[in-house]
Amino acid sequence: MNQNLSALSIGVVGAAITLSAYSQTLVSPTQCVAVGLLVLMFGLLVGEGLISL
Figure (cartoon, rainbow, N blue to C red):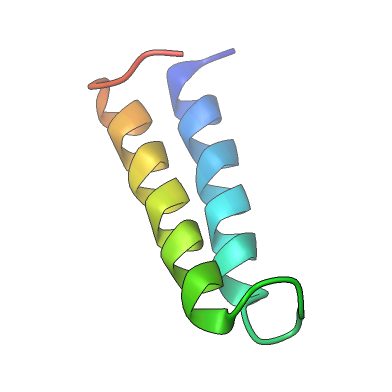
């Protein structure tokens, strides 16, 4: 898979996790936002080429 496409798909997953923070009941909203932001940061690192998949 292309590096940019991988970063985009990781970013979409991170955004979905962050946006679903208040509509789910599995974990607290704070934890959900934190996990979403960590996934977004991982996508950024993949997009910049610092981490290769």
